[in-house]
Amino acid sequence: MKKKALVLITAFTVMMAMSFSAMPTFAADTPSGTAITSAADFVKIEANPSGSYYLANDIDLGGDVNICTTTAKQFTGTFDGNGHAITGYAVSSPKTSHTGIFGYAKGAKFKNLKITGINVKISDDYQYYGTILSYGNGCTFSGITVTGNINVTISGTESSANIGGIAGLVYDSKYISCKNSANITVSVSGTTSSGVEVAGINTGGSSYSKCTNTGKLTVTGSNLGFSTDTIAAYGIGKSGSFTNCKNAGAISATAGGKSGSYLTEGLFAAGIGGSTTSATDKVVSCGNTGKISLKATDAIYNSAAASGLISGFARTVSKCYNKGAVTYSTKGANVEGSYASGICGAGGTISQSYNKGNITATHTGNEIHVGGISGDLNDMSNCYNVGKVVLNGHGYVGGISGYAYGKATCNYATGKVSGTAKPAKGTIFGYNTNNYVKHTIYNNYYTTGKAYGASDVTWKDWKALAKKVSSIKKSTCPKLSSKYWKYSSKYKRMILKNNQE
Image (cartoon, rainbow, N blue to C red; front, side):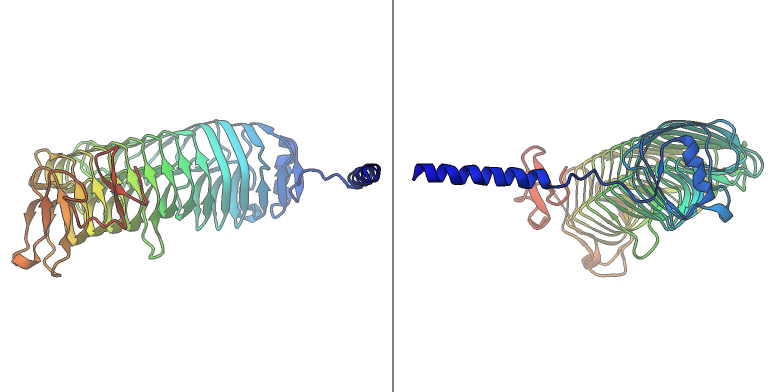
Protein backbone atom coordinates (compact mmCIF):
# COMPACT_ATOMS: atom_id res chain seq x y z
CA MET A 1 0.00 0.00 0.00
CA LYS A 2 2.81 2.39 0.91
CA LYS A 3 4.62 1.44 -2.29
CA LYS A 4 1.54 2.28 -4.43
CA ALA A 5 1.13 5.66 -2.72
CA LEU A 6 4.79 6.47 -3.36
CA VAL A 7 4.38 5.69 -7.05
CA LEU A 8 1.32 7.97 -7.30
CA ILE A 9 3.11 10.86 -5.59
CA THR A 10 6.12 10.47 -7.87
CA ALA A 11 3.93 10.43 -10.97
CA PHE A 12 2.07 13.56 -9.81
CA THR A 13 5.39 15.36 -9.19
CA VAL A 14 6.63 14.52 -12.68
CA MET A 15 3.36 15.71 -14.25
CA MET A 16 3.49 19.04 -12.40
CA ALA A 17 7.10 19.57 -13.40
CA MET A 18 6.24 18.92 -17.04
CA SER A 19 3.25 21.28 -16.87
CA PHE A 20 5.24 24.20 -15.42
CA SER A 21 8.12 23.67 -17.83
CA ALA A 22 5.66 23.89 -20.69
CA MET A 23 4.12 27.18 -19.49
CA PRO A 24 5.21 30.24 -21.48
CA THR A 25 7.09 33.08 -19.74
CA PHE A 26 5.65 36.60 -19.85
CA ALA A 27 7.61 39.86 -20.00
CA ALA A 28 6.54 42.90 -17.97
CA ASP A 29 3.75 44.95 -19.52
CA THR A 30 5.02 47.39 -22.13
CA PRO A 31 3.04 50.57 -22.81
CA SER A 32 1.57 50.93 -26.26
CA GLY A 33 3.00 53.40 -28.74
CA THR A 34 6.45 54.52 -29.77
CA ALA A 35 9.39 54.02 -27.42
CA ILE A 36 11.49 57.07 -26.52
CA THR A 37 15.05 56.21 -25.53
CA SER A 38 16.91 59.52 -25.98
CA ALA A 39 16.52 63.27 -26.36
CA ALA A 40 16.83 62.80 -30.13
CA ASP A 41 13.84 60.44 -30.06
CA PHE A 42 11.89 62.90 -27.95
CA VAL A 43 12.06 65.84 -30.34
CA LYS A 44 10.70 63.61 -33.12
CA ILE A 45 7.33 63.64 -31.32
CA GLU A 46 6.64 67.00 -32.99
CA ALA A 47 6.45 65.25 -36.39
CA ASN A 48 3.41 63.26 -35.18
CA PRO A 49 1.86 65.18 -32.25
CA SER A 50 -1.25 62.98 -32.13
CA GLY A 51 0.66 59.77 -31.46
CA SER A 52 1.25 57.70 -28.33
CA TYR A 53 4.72 57.66 -26.77
CA TYR A 54 6.44 56.17 -23.74
CA LEU A 55 9.84 56.37 -22.10
CA ALA A 56 11.75 53.11 -22.32
CA ASN A 57 14.40 54.45 -19.94
CA ASP A 58 15.48 57.68 -18.22
CA ILE A 59 16.53 60.38 -20.68
CA ASP A 60 18.68 63.49 -20.38
CA LEU A 61 17.32 66.39 -22.44
CA GLY A 62 20.65 68.16 -22.23
CA GLY A 63 19.23 71.67 -21.89
CA ASP A 64 16.31 73.56 -23.42
CA VAL A 65 13.96 71.30 -25.37
CA ASN A 66 10.68 72.92 -26.40
CA ILE A 67 8.41 71.05 -28.85
CA CYS A 68 4.88 71.57 -30.18
CA THR A 69 5.30 75.33 -29.97
CA THR A 70 2.32 76.37 -32.12
CA THR A 71 -1.36 75.54 -32.09
CA ALA A 72 -0.94 74.02 -35.56
CA LYS A 73 1.49 71.49 -34.06
CA GLN A 74 0.02 71.21 -30.57
CA PHE A 75 0.30 67.86 -28.82
CA THR A 76 -2.96 65.87 -28.77
CA GLY A 77 -1.60 62.41 -28.04
CA THR A 78 -0.39 60.45 -25.00
CA PHE A 79 2.98 60.68 -23.29
CA ASP A 80 3.65 57.94 -20.72
CA GLY A 81 6.75 58.31 -18.59
CA ASN A 82 6.44 54.63 -17.71
CA GLY A 83 7.91 55.39 -14.28
CA HIS A 84 11.09 56.84 -15.78
CA ALA A 85 12.61 60.30 -15.41
CA ILE A 86 13.49 63.25 -17.61
CA THR A 87 16.65 64.97 -16.43
CA GLY A 88 18.83 67.80 -17.70
CA TYR A 89 15.99 70.22 -18.52
CA ALA A 90 17.37 73.76 -18.36
CA VAL A 91 16.24 77.10 -19.81
CA SER A 92 18.21 80.34 -19.89
CA SER A 93 17.12 81.94 -23.17
CA PRO A 94 13.52 80.97 -23.93
CA LYS A 95 12.74 80.33 -27.58
CA THR A 96 9.11 81.44 -27.28
CA SER A 97 6.74 83.06 -24.80
CA HIS A 98 5.23 79.59 -24.22
CA THR A 99 8.08 77.84 -22.49
CA GLY A 100 7.90 74.24 -21.37
CA ILE A 101 8.91 70.81 -22.58
CA PHE A 102 5.65 70.90 -24.55
CA GLY A 103 4.48 74.33 -25.73
CA TYR A 104 0.82 73.70 -26.63
CA ALA A 105 -1.52 70.76 -26.05
CA LYS A 106 -5.20 69.96 -26.36
CA GLY A 107 -6.88 66.84 -24.99
CA ALA A 108 -3.48 65.28 -24.36
CA LYS A 109 -2.57 62.80 -21.65
CA PHE A 110 0.63 62.94 -19.59
CA LYS A 111 1.29 60.27 -16.99
CA ASN A 112 3.76 58.35 -14.81
CA LEU A 113 6.60 60.83 -15.29
CA LYS A 114 9.34 62.32 -13.13
CA ILE A 115 11.07 65.53 -14.21
CA THR A 116 14.00 66.04 -11.89
CA GLY A 117 16.57 68.73 -11.24
CA ILE A 118 15.16 71.37 -13.59
CA ASN A 119 17.09 74.64 -13.85
CA VAL A 120 15.02 77.47 -15.32
CA LYS A 121 16.19 81.10 -15.47
CA ILE A 122 14.00 83.30 -17.68
CA SER A 123 14.03 87.05 -18.27
CA ASP A 124 11.16 88.15 -20.48
CA ASP A 125 8.30 90.62 -20.78
CA TYR A 126 5.54 88.08 -21.41
CA GLN A 127 5.66 84.41 -20.44
CA TYR A 128 3.58 81.28 -19.96
CA TYR A 129 5.78 78.70 -18.28
CA GLY A 130 4.94 75.14 -17.24
CA THR A 131 7.57 72.44 -16.84
CA ILE A 132 5.73 69.80 -18.84
CA LEU A 133 3.21 72.06 -20.65
CA SER A 134 3.01 75.80 -21.17
CA TYR A 135 -0.52 76.33 -22.51
CA GLY A 136 -3.53 74.16 -23.30
CA ASN A 137 -6.94 72.80 -22.40
CA GLY A 138 -8.79 69.53 -21.85
CA CYS A 139 -5.65 67.63 -20.80
CA THR A 140 -5.08 64.95 -18.16
CA PHE A 141 -2.00 64.83 -15.93
CA SER A 142 -1.51 61.85 -13.61
CA GLY A 143 1.47 60.73 -11.57
CA ILE A 144 3.65 63.72 -12.58
CA THR A 145 6.41 64.96 -10.25
CA VAL A 146 8.74 67.94 -10.72
CA THR A 147 11.84 68.95 -8.74
CA GLY A 148 14.40 71.73 -9.18
CA ASN A 149 14.32 75.52 -9.41
CA ILE A 150 12.31 77.98 -11.53
CA ASN A 151 13.33 81.64 -11.61
CA VAL A 152 11.43 84.08 -13.81
CA THR A 153 11.89 87.86 -14.17
CA ILE A 154 9.17 89.74 -16.03
CA SER A 155 9.50 93.43 -16.92
CA GLY A 156 8.10 95.96 -19.35
CA THR A 157 5.08 98.19 -19.83
CA GLU A 158 2.88 95.24 -20.86
CA SER A 159 4.58 92.56 -18.80
CA SER A 160 2.68 89.53 -17.55
CA ALA A 161 3.24 85.89 -16.62
CA ASN A 162 1.52 82.65 -15.69
CA ILE A 163 4.02 80.27 -14.08
CA GLY A 164 3.25 76.74 -12.89
CA GLY A 165 5.43 73.94 -11.57
CA ILE A 166 3.62 71.29 -13.64
CA ALA A 167 1.71 73.41 -16.20
CA GLY A 168 1.56 77.10 -17.04
CA LEU A 169 -1.95 78.13 -18.06
CA VAL A 170 -4.03 75.06 -18.84
CA TYR A 171 -7.82 75.15 -18.60
CA ASP A 172 -10.52 72.53 -18.05
CA SER A 173 -8.04 69.78 -17.28
CA LYS A 174 -7.53 67.07 -14.66
CA TYR A 175 -4.57 66.68 -12.32
CA ILE A 176 -4.36 63.41 -10.41
CA SER A 177 -1.58 62.51 -7.95
CA CYS A 178 0.73 65.26 -9.22
CA LYS A 179 3.46 66.78 -7.06
CA ASN A 180 5.54 69.91 -7.40
CA SER A 181 8.70 70.18 -5.29
CA ALA A 182 10.37 72.84 -7.44
CA ASN A 183 11.02 76.20 -5.80
CA ILE A 184 9.45 78.96 -7.91
CA THR A 185 10.58 82.58 -7.68
CA VAL A 186 8.93 85.18 -9.92
CA SER A 187 9.32 88.95 -9.99
CA VAL A 188 7.38 91.39 -12.15
CA SER A 189 7.79 95.12 -12.72
CA GLY A 190 6.28 97.68 -15.06
CA THR A 191 4.05 100.69 -14.68
CA THR A 192 1.27 99.14 -16.76
CA SER A 193 2.07 95.53 -16.06
CA SER A 194 -0.65 92.93 -16.49
CA GLY A 195 0.64 91.14 -13.42
CA VAL A 196 1.70 87.61 -12.61
CA GLU A 197 0.15 84.44 -11.21
CA VAL A 198 2.14 81.52 -9.83
CA ALA A 199 0.98 78.03 -8.81
CA GLY A 200 2.65 74.83 -7.75
CA ILE A 201 0.59 72.78 -10.21
CA ASN A 202 -1.26 75.06 -12.71
CA THR A 203 -2.61 78.62 -12.91
CA GLY A 204 -5.70 77.74 -15.00
CA GLY A 205 -9.12 76.56 -13.83
CA SER A 206 -9.18 72.74 -13.57
CA SER A 207 -9.86 69.86 -11.18
CA TYR A 208 -7.17 68.61 -8.79
CA SER A 209 -7.14 65.31 -6.91
CA LYS A 210 -4.43 64.03 -4.56
CA CYS A 211 -2.05 66.79 -5.66
CA THR A 212 0.74 68.16 -3.48
CA ASN A 213 3.02 71.16 -3.42
CA THR A 214 6.15 71.21 -1.26
CA GLY A 215 8.04 73.84 -3.26
CA LYS A 216 8.55 77.37 -1.98
CA LEU A 217 6.54 79.84 -4.11
CA THR A 218 7.53 83.51 -4.09
CA VAL A 219 6.04 86.20 -6.32
CA THR A 220 7.04 89.85 -6.07
CA GLY A 221 5.75 92.90 -7.93
CA SER A 222 7.68 96.18 -7.85
CA ASN A 223 7.37 99.63 -9.43
CA LEU A 224 3.79 98.77 -10.33
CA GLY A 225 1.23 101.22 -11.61
CA PHE A 226 -2.52 101.73 -11.68
CA SER A 227 -3.37 99.29 -14.46
CA THR A 228 -1.50 96.36 -12.93
CA ASP A 229 -3.57 93.20 -12.73
CA THR A 230 -3.36 90.36 -10.21
CA ILE A 231 -0.26 89.45 -8.22
CA ALA A 232 -0.91 85.98 -6.81
CA ALA A 233 0.63 82.74 -5.56
CA TYR A 234 -1.32 79.50 -5.01
CA GLY A 235 0.04 76.21 -3.72
CA ILE A 236 -2.01 74.06 -6.11
CA GLY A 237 -4.08 76.05 -8.65
CA LYS A 238 -6.02 79.24 -9.21
CA SER A 239 -9.56 77.84 -9.39
CA GLY A 240 -11.68 74.73 -9.81
CA SER A 241 -12.31 71.69 -7.62
CA PHE A 242 -9.75 70.42 -5.11
CA THR A 243 -9.92 66.99 -3.47
CA ASN A 244 -7.34 65.47 -1.11
CA CYS A 245 -4.78 68.15 -2.00
CA LYS A 246 -2.02 69.30 0.33
CA ASN A 247 0.38 72.23 0.50
CA ALA A 248 3.50 72.22 2.67
CA GLY A 249 5.51 74.88 0.83
CA ALA A 250 5.87 78.49 1.98
CA ILE A 251 3.70 80.81 -0.17
CA SER A 252 4.53 84.51 -0.44
CA ALA A 253 3.03 87.38 -2.48
CA THR A 254 4.47 90.88 -2.20
CA ALA A 255 3.71 94.02 -4.18
CA GLY A 256 4.92 97.59 -4.19
CA GLY A 257 4.12 100.51 -6.46
CA LYS A 258 5.10 104.04 -7.15
CA SER A 259 4.64 106.35 -4.22
CA GLY A 260 1.07 107.57 -3.97
CA SER A 261 -0.23 105.36 -6.77
CA TYR A 262 -2.74 102.55 -6.70
CA LEU A 263 -0.80 99.34 -6.57
CA THR A 264 -2.68 96.45 -8.12
CA GLU A 265 -6.16 95.12 -8.82
CA GLY A 266 -5.66 92.08 -6.63
CA LEU A 267 -3.04 90.59 -4.34
CA PHE A 268 -3.52 86.98 -3.21
CA ALA A 269 -1.66 84.21 -1.39
CA ALA A 270 -3.13 80.82 -0.50
CA GLY A 271 -2.02 77.29 0.31
CA ILE A 272 -4.41 75.60 -2.12
CA GLY A 273 -6.19 77.97 -4.54
CA GLY A 274 -7.83 81.25 -5.37
CA SER A 275 -11.53 80.48 -5.72
CA THR A 276 -14.21 77.90 -6.45
CA THR A 277 -16.82 79.84 -8.37
CA SER A 278 -18.70 77.16 -10.32
CA ALA A 279 -21.73 75.52 -8.73
CA THR A 280 -19.99 72.14 -9.06
CA ASP A 281 -16.67 73.25 -7.57
CA LYS A 282 -15.75 71.83 -4.17
CA VAL A 283 -12.83 71.81 -1.77
CA VAL A 284 -12.83 68.48 0.07
CA SER A 285 -10.27 66.90 2.44
CA CYS A 286 -7.57 69.47 1.66
CA GLY A 287 -4.96 70.85 4.04
CA ASN A 288 -2.19 73.39 4.42
CA THR A 289 0.86 73.32 6.70
CA GLY A 290 2.96 75.91 4.86
CA LYS A 291 3.48 79.53 5.91
CA ILE A 292 1.32 81.97 3.95
CA SER A 293 2.48 85.58 3.61
CA LEU A 294 1.00 88.62 1.87
CA LYS A 295 2.50 92.10 1.94
CA ALA A 296 1.76 95.35 0.10
CA THR A 297 3.57 98.62 0.50
CA ASP A 298 1.08 100.86 -1.32
CA ALA A 299 -2.66 101.14 -1.85
CA ILE A 300 -4.55 98.22 -3.39
CA TYR A 301 -7.20 99.13 -5.93
CA ASN A 302 -9.43 96.05 -5.77
CA SER A 303 -8.89 93.37 -3.13
CA ALA A 304 -6.30 91.43 -1.16
CA ALA A 305 -6.55 88.08 0.60
CA ALA A 306 -4.28 85.62 2.38
CA SER A 307 -5.54 82.22 3.48
CA GLY A 308 -4.33 78.79 4.43
CA LEU A 309 -6.56 77.21 1.78
CA ILE A 310 -8.69 79.39 -0.52
CA SER A 311 -7.99 83.12 -0.70
CA GLY A 312 -11.21 84.18 -2.42
CA PHE A 313 -14.76 82.86 -2.50
CA ALA A 314 -15.35 79.15 -1.82
CA ARG A 315 -18.70 77.56 -2.64
CA THR A 316 -18.37 74.30 -0.74
CA VAL A 317 -15.61 73.39 1.72
CA SER A 318 -15.64 70.24 3.83
CA LYS A 319 -13.20 68.22 5.95
CA CYS A 320 -10.34 70.68 5.44
CA TYR A 321 -7.69 72.10 7.78
CA ASN A 322 -5.04 74.77 8.11
CA LYS A 323 -2.02 74.43 10.38
CA GLY A 324 0.21 77.05 8.76
CA ALA A 325 0.73 80.60 9.99
CA VAL A 326 -1.02 83.23 7.84
CA THR A 327 0.46 86.75 7.80
CA TYR A 328 -1.25 89.68 6.09
CA SER A 329 0.20 93.20 5.90
CA THR A 330 -1.12 96.03 3.72
CA LYS A 331 -1.68 99.74 3.85
CA GLY A 332 -3.89 102.04 1.83
CA ALA A 333 -7.44 101.74 0.55
CA ASN A 334 -8.95 98.39 -0.40
CA VAL A 335 -12.01 99.17 -2.49
CA GLU A 336 -13.95 95.91 -2.65
CA GLY A 337 -12.70 93.75 0.17
CA SER A 338 -9.81 92.25 2.08
CA TYR A 339 -9.57 88.95 3.92
CA ALA A 340 -7.18 87.01 6.11
CA SER A 341 -8.19 83.55 7.26
CA GLY A 342 -7.27 79.95 7.95
CA ILE A 343 -9.62 78.24 5.50
CA CYS A 344 -11.14 80.71 3.01
CA GLY A 345 -11.64 84.40 2.39
CA ALA A 346 -15.40 84.35 1.88
CA GLY A 347 -17.18 81.08 2.49
CA GLY A 348 -20.27 79.63 0.88
CA THR A 349 -20.88 76.40 2.80
CA ILE A 350 -18.12 75.28 5.16
CA SER A 351 -18.36 72.14 7.28
CA GLN A 352 -16.19 69.79 9.36
CA SER A 353 -13.09 71.97 9.04
CA TYR A 354 -10.61 73.45 11.50
CA ASN A 355 -7.79 75.95 11.92
CA LYS A 356 -4.73 75.59 14.16
CA GLY A 357 -2.54 78.22 12.49
CA ASN A 358 -2.04 81.70 13.86
CA ILE A 359 -3.69 84.39 11.70
CA THR A 360 -2.07 87.83 11.93
CA ALA A 361 -3.26 90.88 9.98
CA THR A 362 -1.94 94.43 9.92
CA HIS A 363 -4.10 96.76 7.88
CA THR A 364 -4.38 100.54 7.57
CA GLY A 365 -6.86 100.84 4.70
CA ASN A 366 -10.60 100.29 4.49
CA GLU A 367 -12.06 97.47 6.56
CA ILE A 368 -10.64 93.96 6.48
CA HIS A 369 -12.44 90.78 7.57
CA VAL A 370 -10.24 88.38 9.55
CA GLY A 371 -11.22 84.95 10.88
CA GLY A 372 -9.74 81.68 12.06
CA ILE A 373 -11.96 79.80 9.60
CA SER A 374 -13.16 82.48 7.17
CA GLY A 375 -13.18 86.22 6.64
CA ASP A 376 -16.90 86.22 5.76
CA LEU A 377 -19.36 83.59 6.93
CA ASN A 378 -22.41 82.46 5.01
CA ASP A 379 -23.16 78.89 6.14
CA MET A 380 -20.84 77.12 8.58
CA SER A 381 -21.32 74.02 10.72
CA ASN A 382 -19.15 71.71 12.81
CA CYS A 383 -15.98 73.77 12.53
CA TYR A 384 -13.49 75.00 15.12
CA ASN A 385 -10.58 77.36 15.65
CA VAL A 386 -7.78 76.92 18.20
CA GLY A 387 -5.24 79.26 16.57
CA LYS A 388 -4.55 82.84 17.66
CA VAL A 389 -6.24 85.49 15.53
CA VAL A 390 -4.88 89.06 15.56
CA LEU A 391 -5.97 92.21 13.75
CA ASN A 392 -4.15 95.49 14.10
CA GLY A 393 -6.12 97.97 12.06
CA HIS A 394 -9.58 98.80 10.80
CA GLY A 395 -12.00 95.91 10.37
CA TYR A 396 -13.69 92.91 11.97
CA VAL A 397 -11.97 89.92 13.53
CA GLY A 398 -13.33 86.68 14.98
CA GLY A 399 -12.06 83.26 15.95
CA ILE A 400 -14.56 81.64 13.60
CA SER A 401 -15.26 84.50 11.18
CA GLY A 402 -14.67 88.20 11.00
CA TYR A 403 -18.08 88.95 9.52
CA ALA A 404 -21.25 86.84 9.72
CA TYR A 405 -24.35 87.27 7.59
CA GLY A 406 -25.71 83.74 7.34
CA LYS A 407 -26.01 80.48 9.25
CA ALA A 408 -23.60 79.14 11.87
CA THR A 409 -24.26 76.12 14.07
CA CYS A 410 -22.26 73.68 16.19
CA ASN A 411 -18.91 75.46 16.00
CA TYR A 412 -16.41 76.30 18.75
CA ALA A 413 -13.47 78.64 19.28
CA THR A 414 -10.73 78.52 21.91
CA GLY A 415 -8.04 80.57 20.20
CA LYS A 416 -7.35 84.03 21.58
CA VAL A 417 -8.61 86.94 19.47
CA SER A 418 -6.66 90.15 20.00
CA GLY A 419 -5.24 93.34 18.48
CA THR A 420 -6.40 96.89 18.00
CA ALA A 421 -9.25 95.92 15.69
CA LYS A 422 -11.84 98.62 15.15
CA PRO A 423 -14.73 98.53 15.17
CA ALA A 424 -15.22 94.98 16.43
CA LYS A 425 -13.62 91.72 17.59
CA GLY A 426 -15.07 88.58 19.16
CA THR A 427 -13.98 85.05 19.97
CA ILE A 428 -16.60 83.70 17.54
CA PHE A 429 -17.55 86.62 15.26
CA GLY A 430 -16.29 90.14 14.93
CA TYR A 431 -19.60 91.37 13.57
CA ASN A 432 -23.02 89.78 13.12
CA THR A 433 -25.44 91.28 10.64
CA ASN A 434 -27.83 88.38 10.24
CA ASN A 435 -31.05 90.33 10.54
CA TYR A 436 -32.95 88.47 7.84
CA VAL A 437 -33.76 84.96 9.07
CA LYS A 438 -34.82 83.86 12.54
CA HIS A 439 -32.62 81.51 14.58
CA THR A 440 -29.77 80.79 12.20
CA ILE A 441 -26.80 81.25 14.58
CA TYR A 442 -26.91 78.96 17.61
CA ASN A 443 -25.25 76.02 19.42
CA ASN A 444 -21.81 77.63 19.24
CA TYR A 445 -19.26 77.51 22.08
CA TYR A 446 -16.25 79.52 23.21
CA THR A 447 -13.86 79.52 26.18
CA THR A 448 -12.37 83.00 26.35
CA GLY A 449 -13.20 86.66 25.74
CA LYS A 450 -16.63 87.62 24.46
CA ALA A 451 -18.53 85.81 21.73
CA TYR A 452 -19.33 88.73 19.42
CA GLY A 453 -17.75 92.11 18.91
CA ALA A 454 -20.81 93.92 17.55
CA SER A 455 -24.14 93.30 15.84
CA ASP A 456 -26.88 95.19 14.07
CA VAL A 457 -29.49 92.53 14.92
CA THR A 458 -32.11 94.20 17.08
CA TRP A 459 -34.77 91.52 17.56
CA LYS A 460 -33.94 89.56 20.68
CA ASP A 461 -35.09 86.13 19.49
CA TRP A 462 -33.15 86.59 16.22
CA LYS A 463 -29.83 87.37 17.89
CA ALA A 464 -26.86 85.02 17.62
CA LEU A 465 -26.60 82.49 20.43
CA ALA A 466 -23.38 81.16 21.95
CA LYS A 467 -22.37 79.64 25.26
CA LYS A 468 -19.18 80.33 27.18
CA VAL A 469 -17.78 77.13 28.68
CA SER A 470 -14.76 76.13 30.76
CA SER A 471 -13.74 73.34 28.38
CA ILE A 472 -14.80 71.75 25.10
CA LYS A 473 -16.21 68.42 26.23
CA LYS A 474 -19.37 66.49 25.59
CA SER A 475 -20.72 67.44 29.01
CA THR A 476 -20.15 71.17 28.48
CA CYS A 477 -20.95 71.26 24.75
CA PRO A 478 -23.88 68.83 24.38
CA LYS A 479 -24.95 70.19 20.98
CA LEU A 480 -21.76 68.94 19.34
CA SER A 481 -23.31 65.79 17.91
CA SER A 482 -21.57 62.42 18.22
CA LYS A 483 -22.24 62.02 14.49
CA TYR A 484 -19.47 64.54 13.81
CA TRP A 485 -17.55 64.93 17.07
CA LYS A 486 -15.56 62.84 19.53
CA TYR A 487 -13.43 63.61 22.57
CA SER A 488 -9.64 63.51 22.18
CA SER A 489 -7.63 62.63 25.28
CA LYS A 490 -4.53 63.95 23.47
CA TYR A 491 -5.93 67.45 22.98
CA LYS A 492 -8.31 67.44 25.96
CA ARG A 493 -11.19 68.68 23.81
CA MET A 494 -13.61 67.64 21.12
CA ILE A 495 -12.28 67.02 17.61
CA LEU A 496 -13.92 66.01 14.36
CA LYS A 497 -14.52 62.32 13.67
CA ASN A 498 -14.13 62.55 9.93
CA ASN A 499 -11.30 65.10 9.91
CA GLN A 500 -9.02 64.23 12.78
CA GLU A 501 -6.06 66.39 13.77
